[in-house]
Image (cartoon, rainbow, N blue to C red):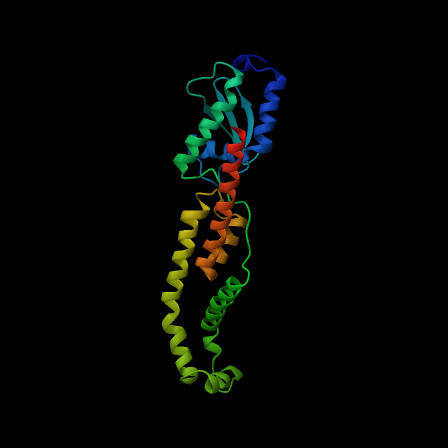
Length: 231
């Protein structure tokens, strides 16, 4: 193989490219976002198509997407330096992007008390949405007249008065989850996993934070134990 790949034989080049494409898509996306200035969405489905002593060529959006050349500065002196350099570059990219080295890749559904909180908040918003149908003569109006203090009119006033404070609190919790848990731990904005955690947070608040923090703590402990075992 000639040109800038003169010190990479075919087998070595294929091995490196296959390894990065099969096991380090996330890191390739980090390179595109940090060194090429792409958004997380634009850097999706990256593929390493060329690597040399002077840099990497990565496509964004799959093998047929736009090509971006990311230089090695300074250039490598041998293929043996590839692993150390790409690890260092990923650390630099993650630091700049505010991404940590522990990734959230799963969702834990609510259980026990968390289900009760989820259901209670969902019931509140359902009550607000159905207020136009709360009319004299309906079964719900009669039930409130019999069991709710102050009757259906007090219920309507309370639900209406609480709406904006409740909505504001839950929207803030969603933003805080996105800003302090999902983005820093590699959950792509708009992905199915992101929407699942955001949806849970909107209805559960602190319960969702407790579950995701447990996932992060377990992964951090596992990473530390592996690091200790390798020394």
